[in-house]
Every structure is written in structure tokens, then in C-alpha cells.
Length: 250
Image 1 (cartoon, rainbow, N blue to C red):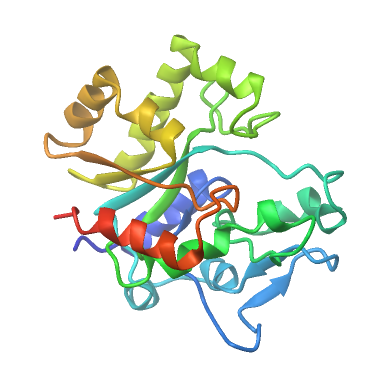
Image 2: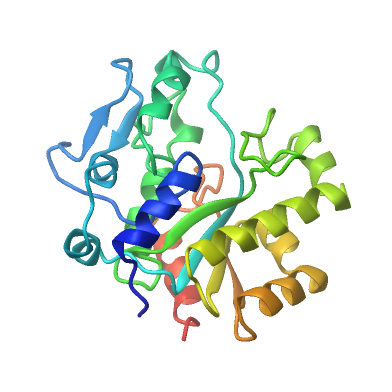
């Protein structure tokens, strides 16, 4: 397994900390693995605090970070602060933390249920090659190639569907992803697409050919089901589905 070193870690943090993370989570029975980011119930896994401490190779190695597998979801967006009360004020404090995305620990309750899927990942990725992987989104660059959240970014929104139909715009996203993974020093990675939309974009022949040319001929693309609670299978079934896919990773 190709490990991450401090230089690579800090490079990714400086360039993509706002829109990426690592597939590692803390857990506890007493809830101490969560902290409230805005004092209104927007809870985050405490591993994010570790991600934002001064890093060295020893800590990174203990976390098990690697670049053999890259998990790619569809799009980078921000929470709508008017959606539910727990989101109030979060966009002003989110910039205080790098590598925060994919690490919400929201309660599985009415109002928050559909937003509470992040924590399913720690259940499903544990003891698989996905644990410790770099996590990012495909669609996260504006037309100037700068990282920028996608407005109206629900996966079924007309805006997002229009963007995915725009060949020039998607070329910018693929080029940006390739540059990102080169900085990660990921060679012949297994790219694990989260959900059907991300997979359909990454698995297009023209895109696969670019990825293989730039990242290595053995670059592979797999698909896993999305962790969102809109995917209504039980946690136990979701875990088994993920393990079935990760068994294909060589």
C-alpha cells in the first residue's frame, strides 16, 4: 500500500482542504466522537480536529492514509443554512477546518434524516481498502478552474444535470481531478465512484482513456452505492454491498 507522507498531506490540504478529506473516522459508544461545529446541532466527527493539527509522517502512518484508492463523489456543495435549524451559521465556520467534508455526524432524526448519511461510511469502509483513502468530488471547479461549491447541488437538480451535459464544463472537471490526483502522487489508482451519476461520468470511454493516460494504464474505476439515507437500505445491507465491491480491489 502506498502511504501518504507529510509533504503530500500538506500539499493536498493547501490546495484542496476545503473540498476533500480522508476516509478515516473516530467512533465511540458515548458520543464523544462528535463535536458541535455551530452550537446548533451541526455535528462533525472529531477526526477532523486531528486532520487540522500539525502533521508528521508518524501520525499519518498511524491514521493509515494512502493513495492507492481514491473515493470520488459527484459534486462539492454547501449546506443551505435555511434548510434546517441545525445548519444555521455553518458556512461562516466551515472555512476554519480543512478536510471536513464527508464527516458530518448528524442525528438520524426527522428533519436531518436525509442529511445524515456520512456516518454510514465509517461502518462500511472499516477493514476494507477504502479506509484511509483520499476522498473528493468530481464536480468542484468553476469555469476558470478554481475550486467553488456548486449552487443548487442536489444530485437531481436541473442545474447539476445541465452542468453534467456541458462537455466543456465536464472537461474542466476531469482535467482538475487529474491534476489533483497527480499532486496526491496516485499512480494506477482504483477510483471508487460514489453513486450512479459519478460513475457514469468517470466511466465514459473518453474520460477513462484520459485517466489511464495521465495516472497509469492500470487505473481502474469501480462503483459503490451512495451513502445517503435516500438510499433506504439498512446499514447492515449497505455494509455488505460495499464489501462486495471492495473485494474486487486488487
